[in-house]
Each structure stands twice: as structure tokens, then as C-alpha cells.
Image 1 (cartoon, rainbow, N blue to C red):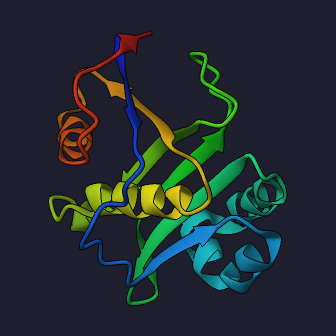
Image 2 (tube, helix red, strand yellow):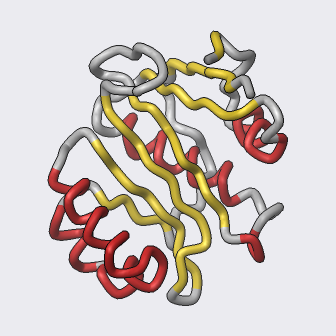
Length: 154
């Protein structure tokens, strides 16, 4: 199955992004502070994997929590993608997930916009995202975040 690659270069933040419940786990201390939430979502082994990833400045997890539960999350890698080449200063948005009972509410779209704003404030301006050509909900989220047409595929 073909996966489509999208790229966006931004200099301005998305306006009107509600960041209540939005958390970026980009440091070990933040990951540990949210340990109960993460263990509840990923299980103990998955939580330990997130702890190891949070040590690296090239891997970031973001999530949206609501009523003590992770309802949407995604990952970011900086300067690396195992499927295609990206610039060393580019962010690759990957593994976006939304809880089944919260799908259709625009949480993937909200999370992508919030994490892009977060990274823009840290000097990152080039963003990649990819998805399978049949993942219509994700294609809709990509369209709603103004990524435009695919720039490639793998």
C-alpha cells in the first residue's frame, strides 16, 4: 500500500488553537510527572519506552488528555525519518492516534496544529507528515492543517 508524504514550511502559528489538555513530553521530568496517565494508556512497558525516548532531544510525544485519560496522541522526530530523507531541522509528525470513542471530533487536527505551534516557538519551520493513501480520516486532518498536496510517496 502506498503512503503519501506531505510537507509544509510555516513561519506563522495557527491561530485559535485550544491547548487545554495538550501536553508535550519533550523532557524526562515531564514524562515522569505524567507517569500515571502514561502507564494507564501505554502500560508499564510502553511507559518505560516513552521514558527512554524522552531522553533524546530528537523524539517527542504529544498528547491530549481529557478527564484523566489520553484521548489523542502523536509522535515527532526531529531531523530523521526511516522512510524518506528530511532536513536535519525538520519535524516529522508520525503515529497520530485518537481514542475510538473520541474520533470525528477533530482531535488529530487539533493536536497537529498545537504541536506545530509548539515547535515553531522553538525555531522549527519545516514539517513533514505521511499516511497511507486509504487513511481518509488522517488525510482529512492533513488537509485541515493546510499541508496541501503530497510531495512524494513510498
